[in-house]
Image (tube, rainbow, N blue to C red):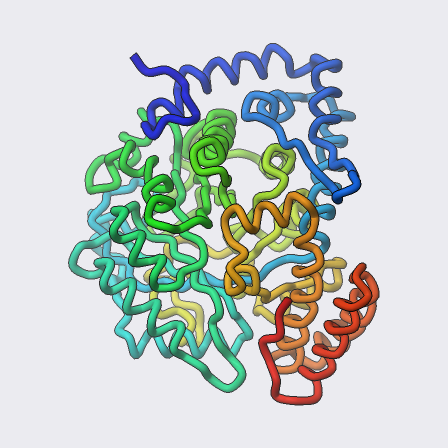
Length: 482
């Protein structure tokens, strides 16, 4: 008989169906319990101490109560606190990245993904190393410094050796002032040995979406292929951490199962990582099912409206205040703009979700994994962020300075990360403006940098950052970092 145990290494015990159902019943029973809701809001609110700002965070059960709450004034308070937490730990910085699709050959039968092996008419492609190099140069010419590589699961077309070779190629490309400084990896669950190889290759974060935590639904949605094994997939992050990868990224595909169930399961997974490994997820992604080659999102009956999606993001931020949150170009410009203040700290820009898409002048659609809603250029996204009061950041310093895993979390929890991240964001934004930006974006960006330099609290750090900004503007020097 299974029992709920966040310290267990068995998926059925740390993602326990009975615990989730009890949580949802508790949340429903207390969704208008004003006394309890007020106490949870107070617990979640960031508090200043002698050592900086701290946040208690919320358990999966506590956060589920807030998600179920339908009292308008309390919902607005959730949004206000989410914004307070976001500003306290991430400031007004938004980290930029782009996905890079290496291969869409796949042996799985995932019913929500056009790469499933039964799809006989989608254009199948695998990049050669020369094509990887060309894609990287195209991304560097936009100004990107951080990539998330993606590949279908296939033992012949995308074995671990191919992934490792691609990572080596990506890091080797230096074009003009361009260089990819961090490669995050989103590939299928694998072995401890293979995770060690990825760590040795110098990856940043290992990302794996659960898709759904509801085991029965999971098995139906993955009818064939290695991904059908729910336990092996769900326990992947433990193997990754055993293999030395201390930055891992979680995510569910909202719309496959009821959002309340997924929300609780996602937070339970985060609690499990904290309980077992002493550090929770580095990032949480919140994709929704979108239209693709032979995929109609309307066939899934668990879609969620934008208003509830925004509330989910805010409640995740209250639950895991120190975890980065990612939203992709699956979502529209309008929605992405609204959720930036609710907890999102990373967004993709100018994404192409087809294999080899960046070297094509026109956006190819015949091998896309999903429709891209926000199709603006990177320059347009950067300018839009600054117009909205955010700092687009191309920083990769923490990863390259060894501030990962529990070292990153300890700095974040004490607020000390601000002394690194704010100046690093301004210096990497300066690089982007000088090397890639349009004149309109440059003018706006340099004004923003001058204003934001004054907000660096440490006088010595402020002076160094200001000098580095000038050096980037007036010389060919790059890659300063705190």
